[in-house]
Length: 413
Image (cartoon, rainbow, N blue to C red):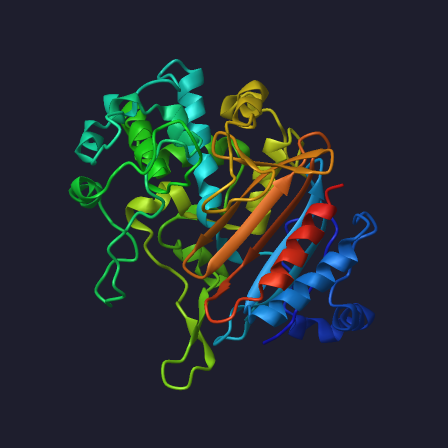
């Protein structure tokens, strides 16, 4: 695996080259080869340690390719790209590489709901069965299905299950995820509310599919078209998409990989799952594909900062600061279940946590072999974003990952 790592000053839009192309660049190639990462003068204290730990985690976990950046007030201060986006093709991960961001997508759905709320089209206290009466098919041991509100779905406190496709047996003909709304409706009579709605946290992917159906009903647009028109376009996010990769971006799309144990030898082996897959009906809870720079543009909006060469003129058209702050208000503690963490709270689709006295906001993502996370400090505009194209199911390097995430959060101080 190539270990091409280049860290740049704020992004200018030029394409970085794989490590093989740096040989002709003299001392720059020497720096990249020896240090593995060249931090810009503006890189925060601790960046070199983070880049070192990232490389160590990539090696320990068998990750094929990864990218990360740190930014402040809309400017990318340093970036690291490690390994390959396509191992078989020997294509290095670069600043153009397109990853899949999994559940980080959920905030796009939540922001869309808040837009419709701010325009008077709905209330967060509307009952979800007002829009989706099909949910009454669920087994409801509490007799409270009609009390579940849009707010509960946004805060993962409605009582719906976590997974969307509960019947997988590993058969090759099974879909990656359900592909149509009718499939979800057909499964509803065989599922149930897991706890009394509104009483605690319970992460739910289907909840965000239900929210997407509300967006489609009220706007008349398919969910992905609505997001493109009302979030991506006004923010100048130009290389993001859902489902299949456009032809003009195909060369930049990362493959995703899963490390499993060989059934015969028990040894770990890396499976190439290809570049594209169909998230189906689950796209609103995890379907965002984008290069790392598009995520930086998105985070600049969240922190009310101006990205390099950009503008905040359209920010109010996307969502007001007051509505964003409302989304970052704690609703339920994330003290048990998926992504539970001591001292972490669920807001309206965002994870809220403390780093000492610092308030941090963010989310994680995972789907197929891709994994990702981002966190930012709204007070300072400091943010860290990282993404990996491999999931190790055989022997994950958990300790190395925990060390890396701790180092990432420390960069925001």
